[in-house]
Image 1 (cartoon, helix red, strand yellow):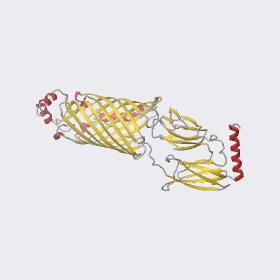
Image 2: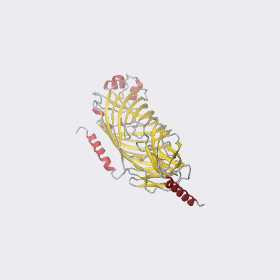
Image 3: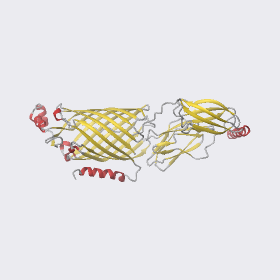
Image 4: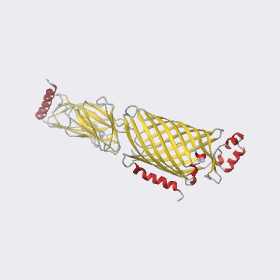
Length: 217
Length: 294
């Protein structure tokens, strides 16, 4: 069977499964070991009973802006094949590079007011940097599954429209040594609340604040 | 107006952004209070003067990528320094600096080799010290891990002044390390060694005594050959003089950051200069600074 046809069949199967059993929702609450909400955690679900629908690019524009000498947002989950725009909203030039296996690339310095784009076609975590401003860092989490969400400031991440069945749930965060994985089951039409506790490493980023220099003798 | 040089510097400072108006600019402003012990660089304790100084500075700069991994930067620097107790030491600096940086690879750990050159004008109450400071320097920086950075720097500098006494030059090497144990705190330390000429000073009686042989014939013979200038900086008859020698310098710095743009700097510096007739000039400086990057 051609690959495209196989993917279409899998997607159809998933849609049918969702229709037949009723779509469910996952409401995740992500907290750290002290019980404080954790933002920027990516919660993704991969079905264990049926293949995930084929990866397809996002239909809405995905944007990671260079603004105030930072990448905003800090973490961006996308489906494999998604094009991400990198508008430079600062008045100065910025650069983008990645040394990550999932997408090594480099975009040389470009002016404020202009934009570059990159298609993230392989699953994995892509760490972005700016070779001029070393403190600038962002993560693109490229996923094959369409079912994912990023936690907000309250630590909440919601994934809707999940077909009933068993799922491998993965929670990723830049400060985790390794993703947290567990299995859960959704019944048709149900809403599941699930809490995740993450043991995060300290948030130690590169210093951005200015420093003085030796004035000589 | 008593301080025309400050007016000139202030004008240049205000015009700096205008001069670069069409370029994508970044700015940095800083202010500093310092306390220097033996600010006059005297060899004898009886001539030691300690003084506070207030400095304000502003820098406007622009960076461009010239080739992959190669960045050029041009900046205009200006500063003014006021010594409330010893007004003769007041001065202002303004001038351009150009920096070419080659980063060997991508990422924070990639080593960076920078070459820079600057021509900074000096305007001062001691008009003989006014002139242009020309500097060339090469710096190699390497970050080890996320939080430790080492730098090696070689520098050549020449100050071309209105008066011979203040026309000095040096070659210097520096080694510096700094660590960021937390994002909000930088701890740094460094050592440096200069070779060349520098300005020292003495009260009228001590200088006359040295010339007369009170410090021995070697000093007297040497002092008879060096350029001098009676600046009256600390007392009537205070004499500045230029000597050849070496300077060993080391420093320690704590730099807490209050935000992404604002940091403080607490710095202690020790310098020990030795001239070619083995006279020593120790100097300690404590600095409290604040820097804001726009």
